[in-house]
Length: 289
Length: 318
Image 1 (cartoon, rainbow over the protein chains, first blue to last red):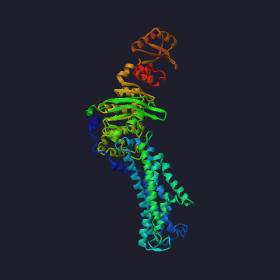
Image 2: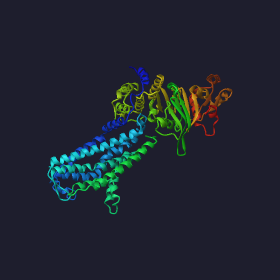
Image 3: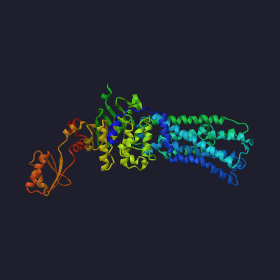
Image 4: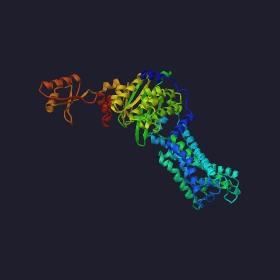
């Protein structure tokens, strides 16, 4: 078929068969994400880095006794995932989620593709939620990979001996498996809060570098602030506090208050950040990008 | 109102301000279905701002825009159901191939047009490079991919902003030929440009803008009627004497040009007569060339005139 035949045929064609929904926008975001090296490298890091860390930890003659569970790393494979969780919560998890969430909106500014998206048949609302869901799923995927890789490599390389808890109690291996998994799961609310914060910075700044580094820096400042005296009233609302809530699970008499406060605090951060970001996207004049 | 009678574009009293700057000042543009319409103006005239408002990328501060009878306020993104195009340079995801970009964009249109991708790649002559990453595309290829991305929406109205901007002469020729071919097929085209020749070549009707205001609105034929005579630049071996001779030709305006030579404006047969007279009187003719076309001259007069000089605008209904 020659071009002169194709053009009239295209013009004469009927309306689109169906209107795009959130699923169409989400599918497009997922396929774009899958094509980005940054996302693949992050996922690969989450899968491989724990194995390397466990290997290094295992080879160390002197365990890091100053770190939580550091003194037990050669005695139980269940202690290593908790050691890594404590370390990862400081800046690794905020960074890994921000690598995608910080870029997912600002990247459109950087590439100038907002107008490419917004001149199609999807609404700003659909694009916003498609991107948000993609970032959230990516964050959960990274956490899942990191935790599974950490736990499996620890058990395989070190063993599944009983775990010594924070109050000195001995936790049988089966119970330790549940508690270690639950401890990693408690990182979900603050991780999602950091994801939403990165989304907000991504929307407001339009600068991927700023939006990726921002949550990490904010997390560090919060950690520093949380360690100071006189800020007890603020601590439940700091994004970093819920990352420590799992401590209540590894004691003789378990307590869940920090988990509940952490859940509420993280929700406040998520709802606040997403509401602000959504309003900004809806109202934005797209000129340059 | 029957569907065929609905205006493709019906913009009434559209205004956009950025602080104290009025980027678009209450302009009204009506484009009928099947028409090829040009919005012409120099940089900063407000053309792109108007195009952005058509696509809902920015909101007007006043006025209303209807596309095939639909408005952003009432119909949301359905307003773009029969509309496609691009504002400024089309942008794509550099880590995706041309085809992958089109597949994704088709998905954002509901997915029904994905089976046309090969056809539109043929139309814009990108089939051979469809599987290359768009970061490797030249400027002209991205422009053509922008047209392809528009065509997969099978629009009734194609809106293109400065489609030949940044292209080399061959690219400009190809892009104009493509738009003409699309227009000839019955597609309504709204084209913005700063190039009078481009608009004259492609469009039926035109709105000329200057600093947010409309200074001319009408058909290309009406514009031609308002245009001055063709200008010429003439160089002889004795320009002083040539000017003296030119004074005897009352229907010609003959003046000196700063860069050297003479400027001669008037009907072609009078210019021919002047040149013969030069030769008859022993002047050696060193150069005779057209300056800008009459429409270009009119365009510059309309868009570069001083604020206080409104005579011409009044004369042409601006």
